[in-house]
Image 1 (cartoon, rainbow, N blue to C red):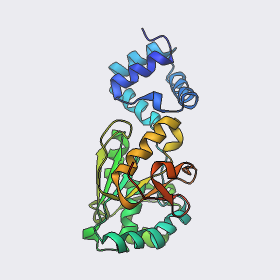
Image 2: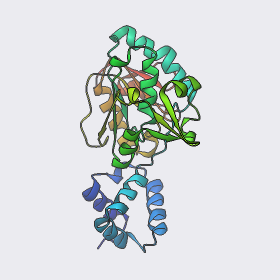
Image 3: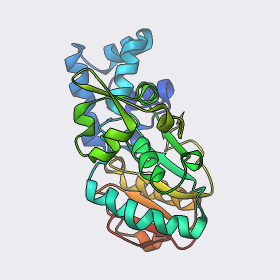
Amino acid sequence: MIRDYEEFKKFVFQQTSIDLNAYKERQMKRRIDTLIQRNKYDGYDSYSKALVTDKEMLDQFVNYLTINVSEFYRNPALWKTLEDVILPDLIDKFGQNLKIWSAACSTGDEPYSLAMVMAKKVPLSKVKIYATDIDDQVLEKAKDGVYGANSLKGLPDEYIKKHFEKMGDRFYKISDEIKRCVEFKKANLLKDSYPSGCHLIVCRNVMIYFTEEAKLDIYKKFNRSLVNDGCLFVGNTEQIINHRDLGYEYDKMFFYRKVKGI
């Protein structure tokens, strides 16, 4: 019998390997309570039993839990800084074969944006983006590469014209050439191993949901994943106040360079 939220957190970890202790509790508990009511269950016990027997409901729960909100070229001014300043510097320092990781990539909008921007700088054959997320459903959507017009609202027309095929009035499909540049894989930032030797890590609009302790741990692991002078690109609400203590130096707004290993 699951009597309260503490016991429900243990159940979720057993079923999904998602550690709810790493998320801001009041915010996450409110989301879960809302989902339970929406599905017309009377509490954690009855809902948890349904999650065990109904895979579709479990998938819905994980998808809701992982808060997948994404769009192409989100915050265009920051992407322009990446395109005009950060990437040219990384290519100058490390060459054209940059190792780029899109962490918590959601439905693929971010890694595909990275691939399109990189394709302006180097031959497509050299563009390799490693993209991970905890949610199987969004990874499948990312691999399909079909998006509604709203997802592309911030993307410059040059990219839409060059890399998308319009499907009817409301949908766009990304080109196979760009799709081949991105490798998608399921991974949990809180417990799985991180890739090494990264020149650029992009993790945006995810850390706001984690506790301070979890954020600290993730930023340290990102530091270990980056090469010296590699860059971490974060969301526009995720300024790293204690970046020096974590081995980073401030570069441009929301871009941080690794200056020492920790």
